[in-house]
Image (cartoon, rainbow, N blue to C red; front, side, top):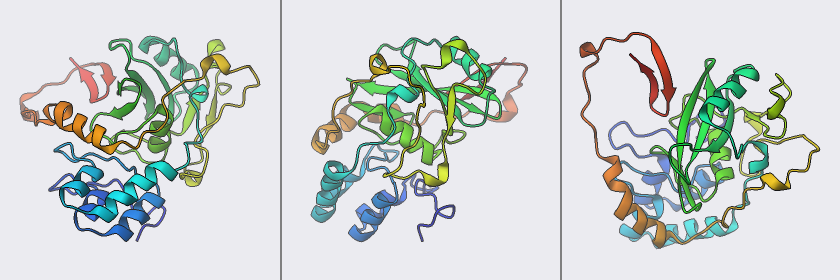
Length: 271
């Protein structure tokens, strides 16, 4: 049933908030787990209770699935996109907006930059319907990365690879990366390279920068991919659950919207 363009591996159950991998783990369907991982499902999606598949397998004593997940982390190839293609080490939010606009505000145009409000965090700047949006990329010691309630990844390239294939809570997928080496002149259509979404999987490149300029100073020296699930499960239990508590919702009939003054991770901001 997993066919390109038909099934979204990250669709959530409307009642539980779980994705297919959570369900497969709890019900002990090891063959389904392997199929989902093979087709690009992230190995660490989170439930509303902050559980990842490995912690569920551990809780329900699914030893064979624990072994599958551990083996997957060891054997999976590194993402074939690198930070030199989209990471802008010295770019503010305002500069990101200007740069995206200079490159035409094309659908899915994106870049990654340091988060100006939180040291050590990053921000994904992404265009949807000609509007730039900015999403916080939480980074814990430059080892665990995630956006909002999305999956956890071991490095920034893995986040870019994932959201190039799945919107997974974002307004659109990542389609074109603004190359940092070409961005300084702000020349339209010269600083980004399109991504063919149909060719994206775990064994294909998701983005590339064609510049011949020396890119060594932009290399993002991230830690190697870790497979210590006990460590991340403990961190999830101790630090993340409090961030996933439900927030009271204000009825839309009580709101009156005027001019839009900005946009960010959770949508547009209006007066």
